[in-house]
Structure formats: structure tokens, C-alpha cells
Length: 120
Image (cartoon, rainbow, N blue to C red; front, side):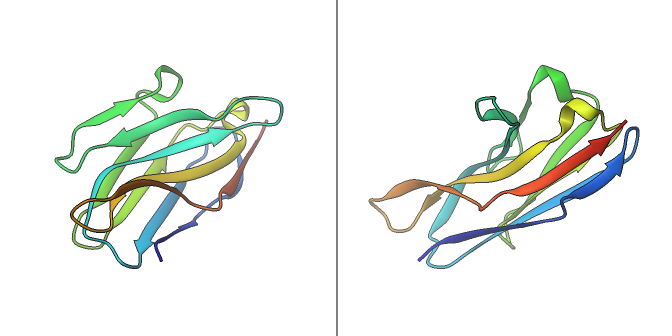
């Protein structure tokens, strides 16, 4: 059984910073892409940032220059450092990972979500 467990959400004032962390555990052969998505009330879930196993990154235009994604392949973790937060960043943030559990099977896994609220 594979699990993604997130931590680090909370309430912060506009202009502040938060750091989200996500740890994958269980029967893991390897992990391909890892990323963070978010979903605000009434909106679809959207990509925030993603990172390949080799460290290449991709960001949503709305967070470029403010958010930084990183990962530790040895620890199966991915982090999201969020600076200069804005009220429109308020959402539930979800960790995502493409995890190979054996030589034949790769699946997409999601964390349970962590609330980020930015007050104006």
C-alpha cells in the first residue's frame, strides 16, 4: 500500500510564506514525476508545480517566481516553498506522484490535501 502524506498548510497573511511537504511511503519501486495541485472552492483542480526525477521543473504561470518545488529522491519527498503569498493562492493543496510499485505497474497517487488560507 502506497501513501502520500502532506504537511505544512495553514493560515498566513498576504505576503507571507509557507512550506508544504509530502512524503511517499509503502511499497515503492521508483517515483517518476511528483507535483503539487490545488483546488479552490468552485474551481477545478489545477497544476501548481511539478518536478521530474531528474529535477526538471514546471510551474503554473500564476506562481512563477514565487513558488519553488524541490524533491529528495532518497527520502521520497517533495516540497513546495511558497513565498509572497496572495489571497488567490487560498486552496486545498494536493501532493501527486507517479509511483512504480513493481516493474510492470505505475500509478498516479494523491495525498489527502492540506488547506492553505491567505488572508488579505
